[in-house]
Length: 154
Image (cartoon, rainbow, N blue to C red):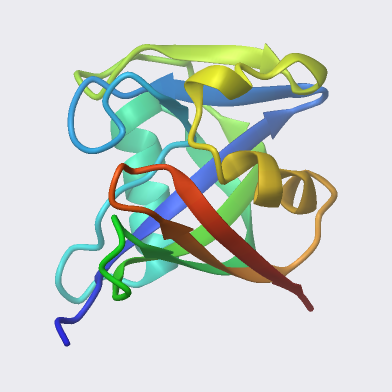
């Protein structure tokens, strides 16, 4: 069994708005998603989260909250291919700047672009937005559709 890639996902919240990025490359291409990416060698998840947010948005996180881990099982393989450390932040500074990672947009939390997001976001994002800690196991079938999402709140 191969070791899963390890990365971060950071949801930035400003009042009733959520910052999302429309990915221009990779597996998330064309989807609205939080900020984040793959851990560099020797980097902690928190260091990665802060670095990725700055690189992708120009924002510096003042405080960061660790929600837990989501293991992603891709395309019917039965093996976790990504281990995602999930964070949120409601305290940040700086001016929003786009990178080549994709355009950024603030969305009203009550009106998120669900049809252009990963299907599993609808399952776990409400836990994050309510400030809960949780772990999740997310399974996609061979076509890339969500087949199961198990969430454990702690």
